[in-house]
Length: 73
Image (cartoon, rainbow, N blue to C red; front, top):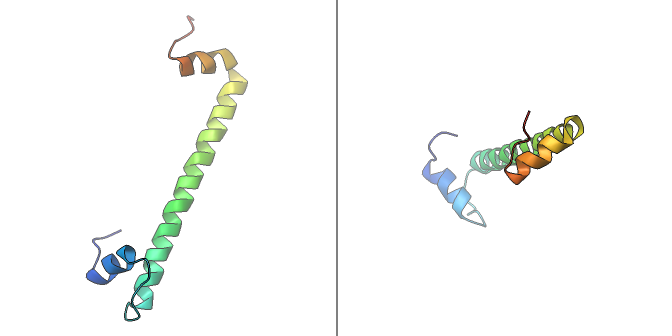
């Protein structure tokens, strides 16, 4: 997101926006917050899937890596 204008900064900082805040600004801030939440949830889902696959492929390697030790090859 580009540098915030005064309107946008006020919309982000105020828990209750003032009546003179433009609707377009409120929508832009809301859309950006939703996009960031979706990106975060996708990253968590990807990490969980990778972890599950790692456990299925080589459970001992995954457990040893988590413990900070590597199994000798």
